Image 1 (cartoon, one colour):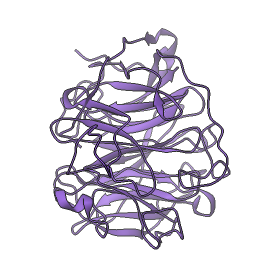
Image 2 (cartoon, one colour):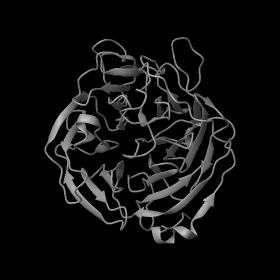
Image 3 (cartoon, rainbow, N blue to C red):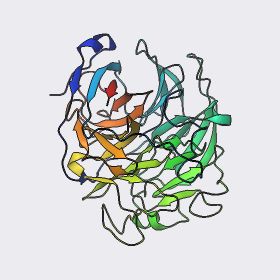
Image 4 (tube, rainbow, N blue to C red):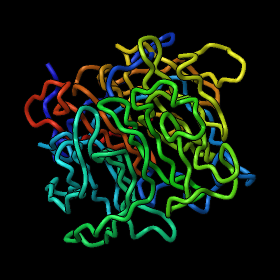
Length: 394
């Protein structure tokens, strides 16, 4: 029995949940995020500039080995196949519907959901459809970016959007990146701007295992591009390349930590799901290796899980830890870090309470938004699914 929705007005009656350590590794997936709320304490375009930058970084103090989660209330209910979640500067949220191809705005105070537009060209099917969304930064701050599956490929577009106007509608889309291979499974889809102002795009191998190791393919990669989609001058796999890293099976979450390092979550096959620290030009092994292999030429994950405990999706950074939403695992994982090393074994929260968890996004300080995914065809919807929850974490 899953926990019923708790309205924001009942926040005083929220439940503090402190879980025991998971103990030992756990990850692989059979299902297919984290961006930072505008105005939050997370890295900005003026902060240290990503894994490729030479600017000095401010290292946060290591978090305690054990944390806690308080479910403060339900922000919105009745969402249909939600996938991407983008915080707006005034506190409202934008949500993408994978299967409907629409983007809706959630009023942070009332929870009212209103559609702001349909993204043209979305062709939902299997794990594909309208997936990750994020607001632009810097000169691109007046755009909403979206990753979606079309009839021929996966692509990223941007649309003019006035985030300050609750009644604003989406503008016409301009293509930023096209030609990412598509399939019924392994479409990737998470996008996030880094503190260097570059757009980072997680893709899947589109069920073409060899494509992940092909530097000329956009499948099974993390891409790093300028806001217009062009390749940056430096910092990627090669000069003129849009590929930051390769050897990925199905990237589902992206998050930047307090020092500007990029982390990614991805589905394994049958053995290990992974959270990886992304290095420019790094090869993460798929399909040659899965999980920690200690093999020359490949980067091992920092954390891994068995599929039944994870099948990871969205990823966020808050309070010195990564927070990982799990689909099949139906739990939120806390991954405490001292720079790039685990402080303790990952710790699970809300296991089985809300069903499948698709997306987690950091608000300012110690708060997270957590979005469920029970109407995606693989879950069992109950009550007011799907919903967005507000959490306080430590």
